[in-house]
Length: 110
Image 1: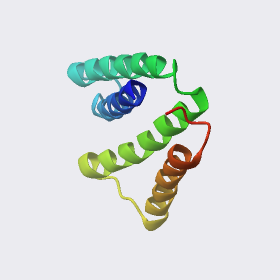
Image 2: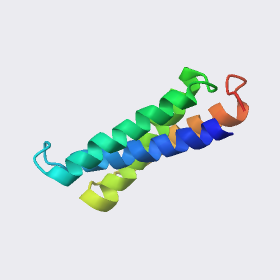
Image 3: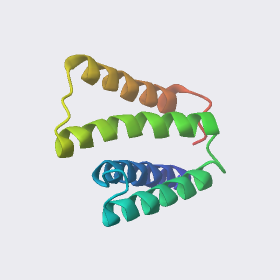
Image 4: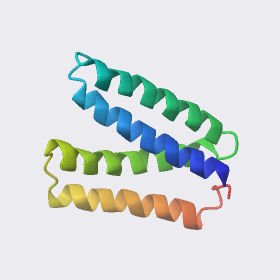
């Protein structure tokens, strides 16, 4: 169970770092740039810990799926990115895929 907590925190750290990457304006702003480096450092450290018990394919599928959806939501809320219907449907399919992987797949270590 601790591995799933680590993976969740890693995903949040990656989303924060990616959002700060946009705000850093190409690493020309100090504090957003620092947040990028620290956020990605935390994210990859916790992902590495996660991979001790969760298979890499499963961990990466959850990481990337959740990250894509969360980044799109953050971009919509903070940066005014427009999300059209196909984008929303696509993100719904990503979420469904992560749920199917976690609920029904025997590849997931619980």
